[in-house]
Length: 125
Image (cartoon, rainbow, N blue to C red; front, side, top):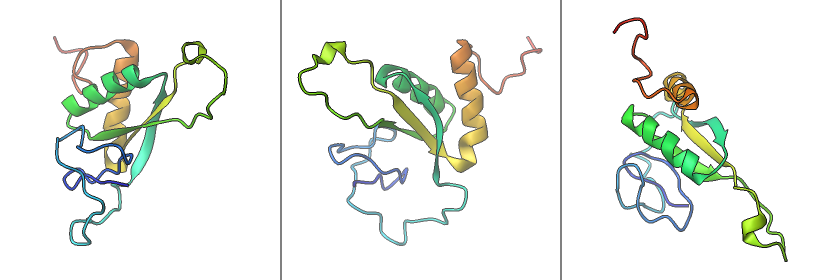
């Protein structure tokens, strides 16, 4: 699996460039690039209803300086079923453990349709 040498996320084999920072992916991270992984391992933030919803959420996370990655849920192909009749494929969105609390605030705000900065005090205008 390819990795981003800057963000240190793992991607699917067909991905050539990091969608977050644009860096060319490498086949493996050199040992000296691998940081202490306590608190920065990937954790599941949420599962959304499709790629578009994942892209919107990942955009909000990126705007807040929170790196993320998306992974399509496993789907077993159904032979003879027209593609248009299949439901949208769920997408899992992952963030680093250290960013999980802030990412949940972003995710909750996005789910409410709140376009304000998630860290903004709602009482101050």
